[in-house]
Amino acid sequence: SGSIRPTITFSKPIVVLGSVDDTKKIPPPASISPAIDGEWQWLGSATVEFIPKGPVPFSTDFTVTVQKGLSAVDGSTLKESYAWAFETPRPKVQSVEPTKSWRWLTPKSKINIVFNQPVANLSQHLKLTAGTNGIAWPFEVVQVTPTADRPLKVGQAHYEISPTRYFPLDADIRLEIDAELRGQDGPLHSNETVTFNYKTYGPMRITGIRAC
Image (tube, rainbow, N blue to C red):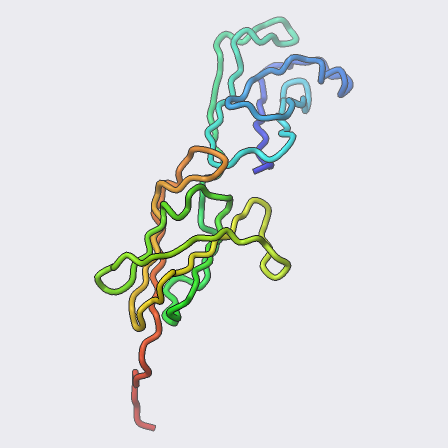
């Protein structure tokens, strides 16, 4: 998530406006934990912004701290340290194919899921069941490489879930992703259980009749 740019505005000028090279020599006014590769850039005499050098890890809690004692241009100092926290996006399903509630799965149908980021150990957080009794169904998970026909946005990850045994016909199929799923970048879980309900096609039957 490279668009993350923590910004601090002080009530008084902290630096004297000068050249970009001059402001780069000023010690950083704050720290970020865990550390992010980048630099603080002054946008004026009282506002400073952190510019990451690359993508900021997903699924991670960060804390920004300004230590007490920071001096303003007039010589006054910050009496107490100040800290605040932010988190980068947690794992989230952004699209699924077939669409939710699709009722025409075949015995060999695969389910494709796109997340906003690569996730860790997806197969351990999936539950696939078949039939009204919810019988656990065997499956395998493969991460799909994007192609020109199926491109991905920056950061997204595409996974394909395939049954390793044919689905029964005319049966309810349920795919569940538990709330403990986390991203590959950081330790934060999705914190939400997501379910997709489907049905395999059944024998042809008349579903309605009316007079002309």
